[in-house]
Length: 172
Image (cartoon, rainbow, N blue to C red; front, side, top):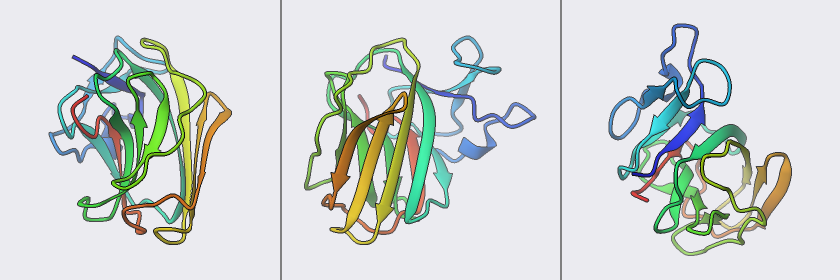
């Protein structure tokens, strides 16, 4: 089973309140595998097992520590910005079978990251976006502080960011 771990995100009462709204229930907390602090948030390989946050702006950024227990058997979303209903993706950051990252939408695949992530290693993955419209936008990814991907005027599926899915957005 492929697992993805996100560093902490727990509040002072050791609950994952920021990530409590998922398609398959509250994400598990794991105190044995952690980057820092008391533990990590664990999403298993079930389809749609992604922790969900709300209120994503048109121009935003996300920085997370991520660790993968294995690489997926098919390219799989690990971070997805969707509209406020959660029904339509704006864009998806996918982990490829090669360990490289790539932006994707229903009509376009972006460039691969230069760096391939390795299993059982923590990475700081940063994503930034500026969405003006479906065809006017900028998407960027950094791995451990190194700019890996810049996509300009990517063919998005939607231009209204509203929510964030972080975990497996489909079965790997």
